Amino acid sequence: MYRVFLVDDRVDVVEGIMALVPWESLGCVAVGSATNGRDAYERIDAKQPDIIITDIKMPVMDGLQLIELCKEQKQQIRFIVLSGYDDFAFAQKAVRLGVDEYILKPAGVEEISETLKRIVESLDEEREKDASVRSLRRQLNQSLPLLRDEYFRFLVSAGRPAGREEAAERFGFLNIAIATEQLVLALLTPFTEEGEAADSVYRQRETAEAAKGILTAYYQCESFCYGADEVALLLHGGNQGPVSERHLRLSFEELGERLQRERGIRLCAGISQEMEDITGIGKAFIQARQALSYGMYRGGSPVVFWNEIAAGPVQDRVDYMDIEDRLVHAVRISDTEEIGRLIGLFFDSNQNVAPQQMKSAVREITTIVSHYALAGEGLGAARTAEEWQETFKRLHTAGDLKAWMVRLFNDISRTLSDNQGGQLAQYVENVKYVVENNYANNISLAAVSELIGLTPPYLSALFKERTGQTFTEYLVSVRIRKAKELLRTGSFKIYEVAEQVGYADVRYFGEIFKKKTGLTPKEFMTKETKA
Image (cartoon, rainbow, N blue to C red):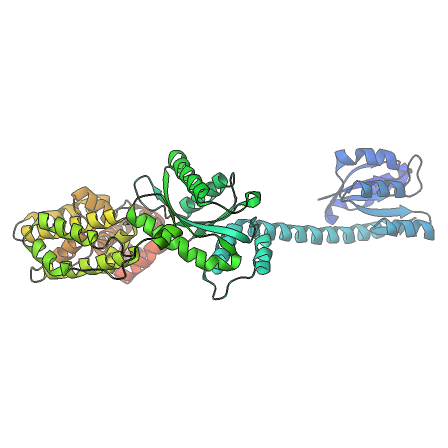
């Protein structure tokens, strides 16, 4: 309802309008009246009118003075002038003051009502437009972090470098408050205290904002989320001039200490050379990525500068040392000491190889050795790089890779040793028992492996070999079997059945159920309860 206030020195006119105008049907309510402009103005704050219907000629303060005073005070009020004076000067001043309507007395109820109707329609349109603008502004503000991240990805990967003027214009629009010259780019990977990559969107964004908040005390700084778990920072020295490596190292060490102490996050940072301006950001990103990769792989200093690795020795190719055959032999005879020695020798001989080359070499060696060590033993599930993808995401340092290889090949040795006994069957039965008693929970192969005491790749291969099903396939089969039992009772809603068998998303449960049974849950329940 729009609030209407009446101003006229004739009480009978005010009372007549109050009584005869169909306020509710017009979407209005009359909130009060005054007999002169001054009284009206003094009551505006209390009454908060949207529309004022006012006479012109009144004692103390006339209607035009009231309107002028309200306009000076930036009051967002619509005015209807109701006057007995058909005077051009009055009308001219009313127009100049932005009066919405000018009605000559005597005016009938229909004319006043039609005038109010036009004002209300105009106010409705204005409010709708304002609401749309507010909604768009709110959506933009909510999307701004993602838009900033997207523009950063464009800058570092575009086929052509962005010009300084173009970048400055986009920076302004996206509220990126940093200069476009003499910039340093840092790339961070945050970890939890347990060593897991902090790869959730929330943790990544939290780290980005925290890093910006801490470093802003020393530099102009803007943060961006990049990829699944990385945080990028653009830094400018501001009035202090070029950023020194010594000061950067101290700042990032402080950042790492504070984030670990306050949020349980530890960092590894790779930092580029200073770029002359924003057109060099693509090259700076590559430098920061390489420095970060080396820092994580070596597991040493949490801060690595590209200048440091550029000046160091580089080994172009991996020296495999014919390690595959020797490892296959050591695994097959369960020589754990030789397994550890060979893997240690391999890493020692390739200390100056780029981290990504080493990770690729480790994948290749592990796949080959696993395949040939298990060949002919009835367990020959060739372990592919795809099966280890999740594991590799958590292997960041040379020490991580080395320890994982030793553990994996020792697992394979145990598999070969136990193949003739009943231990393997017991492992499989333990998995089934855990699934049968925990299918309603969010269980995973990794969690079950930890409970049983085997590595996920080893348990996965063993379970598939012994049952013909993957762990996930078996878990789904148990959940579908339990869902059928519940649906047959007819006592539960579909979403309740989904929750009771471990599916939080009822739509996903329906898709899985139909894929496995050929029927939707509802169709199955209808069929079974009728029978």
